[in-house]
Length: 361
Image (tube, rainbow, N blue to C red):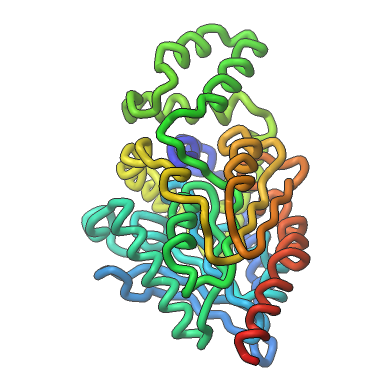
């Protein structure tokens, strides 16, 4: 869960100087041109839709409405994917991408502030995700969509895919989060090993004192733990700075005011995550009635590939596929968007199109 880490990094963007603002303006203008969609059958819609009783921001973009539709579920909590629009522009040549800022996140949070978000719980967000899926199906005239879920979003994704195969033509998890009610302590042990190897014995002692049970962590301990997890791994830290914060800073979709709202939304959204400590994905079931894919960063220290692979091996599905994205930690699909797209084109798109053809026949 990177919300607290990203929120604590807000100071990196909060005090820009004139030169940085000028550079930002040039880069944003270039990215805005990159995002132009002018194909005859293309679509570029961004705005607020009434979802779950509040206005929530949804973007629908693609060069050809005949392409398969992807609905994304972002992570965080509160870490909207709208900031990655320029990095993933190539995806829109082959898929119509539906991005949604959850209640408490990004532009949805900015629209009405903390008082206007309504109930913020896992169950409420889950129902919102179903409503967004149904909105996308109606707007684009399709029976089913590809569900792509990342990090915390994959906690929702597994449950959506398991319970609603009638809505989704395939499930794709990336930065796949596998919850097991705290039984697997490998992430904890790996963090201790990195801290000790770096000579950070005081930090290691603090992590040891927190213990291995996620149920026992206070909000402050969780924040400290997440910061140490990221800061102790150079690849994750580099990705956070260059890919995540860089994408936010140069996003043509976000004003300076919205940068602050982005971080405020993540801080606000963190309140519902403690309840997830008791979730158990295996207990919920490993049978899926739709094609099931996991594309994971090979060096992910937050949601390790080994844990995702172990769960994947237990999954029963009509079609399944697992692949590692090399030289990637968390945010693998955004650090290497072309590699992720190649996997979507070679593994997922053929299955989805074959299924659509069989249905039409």
